[in-house]
Image 1: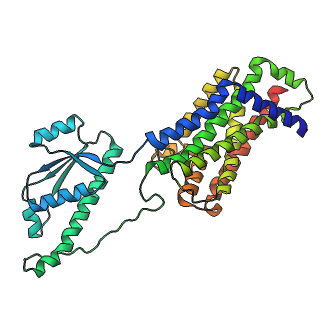
Image 2 (image 1 turned 30 degrees about the vertical axis):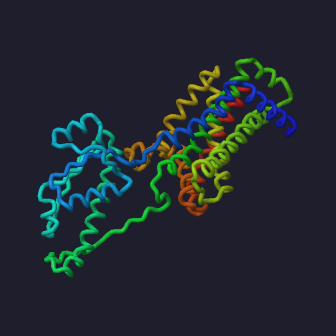
Image 3 (image 1 turned 180 degrees about the vertical axis):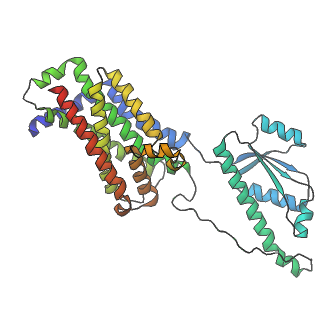
Length: 379
């Protein structure tokens, strides 16, 4: 039995590396996705183009400007002379934010009252606008804190300053991704996408290729049994999937400098559980496709919705409630959470066992039903 399976595996490797379409699938998606989500797709907002409108022109307003320029979030690219000019800059997309210092800014500060800073943000991109708004609030809070800290010193020099002290101060500390780099969030998710796309498409196209060139009938007149055909067809692509995982992990560590805080053996063990589902889906697609083109289109038809509903780019909790329940049927969702928890949080199996159990249940069910359907097709 194992001798026959070994020969089928050997044949699959030869056919896969000989076929130009399969070679493109092996190397194209990993390289393309790593470049896109490691470098091109960047949700970080640094040096936001900002216009500065100072209607007070006092030392206090210039100190606030220095605080703004001292952060890495804002870059003053324009100093409009009027509100119409500032509006024109926003309309043309030349700046992403306009910061206006209103008249009497210095007077309100020296009196101890509430001074107002107007921040106008381009909301065309809601995600970027939200990030810039948060950064602006941080700069304002930092400047306000410095003013409060300087008031006791002013009292010592004889200046009359109202004794207004903060009752509560907040100090934030970001865990798991202190620099808030989007690549730290995206690159681990690439592992899930690559395994799913490569294994589903290669598995489905491999079986359909046998039908197209007429070798499936030749294969079945040999002493090889259907179960041996299934095992021999799936094992090579399971091995290729694990190799893809290793490649992305090495790239994350050496190229993108993203540490993996969890257990690497646990990551590969969870990858094996996930491969049960993707290989099963690929095997099922091969039973409903007659040509490799049909198999490729069917694979994309499954992969794209599954990827979008996995939480790769959009958090599942932000989706409509009905869609959140729908994502519970998506194996990519569970593996996506496992990979990110292992990379970013470094948690162990005691926190991942529910997702692992879900992968095992889905994997056994999908692979088992697909294998039965494939066997019936052969019979």
